[in-house]
Amino acid sequence: MIRKLKAKGFESSRYDKEVLEGEFNGYDVRVHVVTNNNKVSRIMVEDAYPVNETSIRIRFNTLCNQFKNNGKYVSYTDPSNYLISEDENIGYNTTVNNKRYEAVFYQIPEKIDTIAVQNELRPLLLEKYSKEQLENPTEEINKDIEGIVFSYANDIITKSPVWFMIDDEYGEYRILMYYDNEYNRADGSDL
Image 1 (tube, helix red, strand yellow):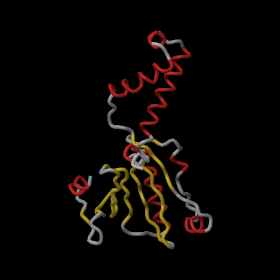
Image 2 (cartoon, helix red, strand yellow):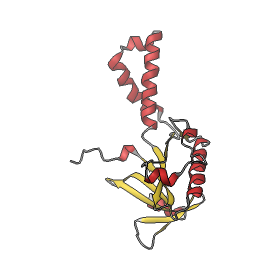
Image 3 (cartoon, one colour):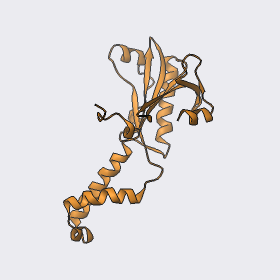
Image 4 (cartoon, one colour):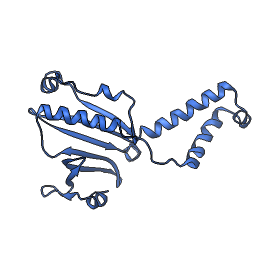
């Protein structure tokens, strides 16, 4: 992953060789790659320079709209609910009310291995229904199958969240963005 990022123009930070620096989505950023068993489980992208409250509101709202309008992502919340209004006092809300400004989107897989999906779904369906029932499903069985398929697809999508938040540093703000791969997260199997 680090080689791929370097090929895109990112360079190792002079302060920390594990951190990459470069431009992402029009902003200077620092990139941190987190691994588990040599597999990437998270990429964190942080703005290199903090900005004032007005600038961070614009930046946050712009990101929300960019994700909303990008067909590679979906949100289970109406993205307009994430937007920060002009009259919102971000500093007061983060400091006094401990409010966290964040938005969550999910990456839609570029391609789905339909054979693998069939190989995983078929046993799930056969646990519940006979071959005959699956070949000639009733309306009720069809509805249940749709629910199982939806749940399966939802599980695939939620394994790749992208979320971002405003980080408050004594009245200066930056965006922290996280690209997570839940497939590579520590699951306690090493304990």
